[in-house]
Length: 397
Image (cartoon, rainbow, N blue to C red; front, top):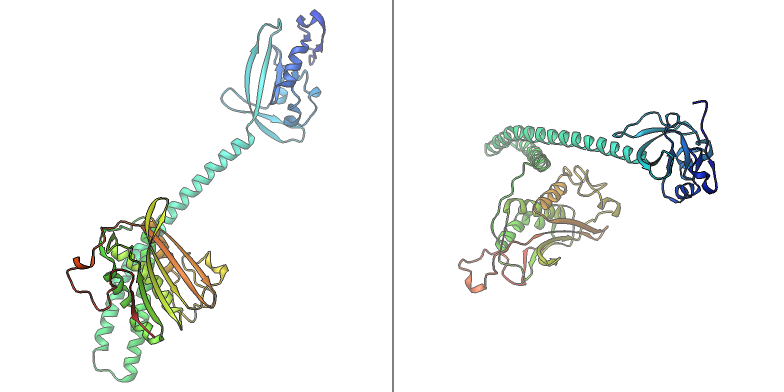
């Protein structure tokens, strides 16, 4: 070629000349959406739609007569071409070709699709998936390591506590007994921490197995309340539980894990309450035509600042200013949340600083038919919660 070829707009029958572009085709290209080019048999640009100006950042008149090879660096039918812009930027362009028939001139219509953002998004998504997969593997490896190490630590720690109990049963003077008691208290705290880490790592590693058995709810709840009798009496606070009449006599679930959740919640409530009461309420709630059993633990303790509530269920998180006064690992609520979620439930917290806190968790109800009073064959324990709406005071001020 002697130079870039330019086509003129003609009138009448001269549009059939190979050097004249039909006005109708030019108008059509201008009207169609998206960036379009029309090229001749030598792949030189004959005309272009107005939208190509934004794509190449130059006036479309400057593109006329230019070979495609000067506009695109590379490309094929299976991979996008690279368009070089006036500012030096590069865009990834997919090109679709269609031959124009019946014009008397060999022309081809090129549809241009800017896929730069799409391809970048896809690459970012692939990188993100790879990062998440690596993170998942790292988290699983960490959890498995913690589970193994916690198990290895728990066995000798239990032996230390056993030997300490034997030592305390022997003849000791006052100073020796005090030192042995300190050893025992430190050992119990350490064993609790080890157990918490083990439970959390099991959940995160997906190695927590849930069991399902029949739980006689009222008697079972009374036994959980009894665990905190001594603490409540020592602090002169009331500890009570209330089960709504609509709650069945027995439910199906993992008694050990459900007890663990309540022990964490009630234990925190008693720990942070110096006057007033700690109350446990059990009710039935309906959500999306499904029945759930809800446990609510409320107290009149120190409360939780609003800015702490969102982070309350994170591992190793303690309410600001409580770590020195109240010993703990900050794992209890994190474990409670994980266990509730493993059971298909939800947990939440609310608080009024200085006046108390409320923790609620609900689980899908899997219950047997309610047992009427005359069908209960055994005599209840003295602290067992009676059927119906009665309130049992496990301890009092």
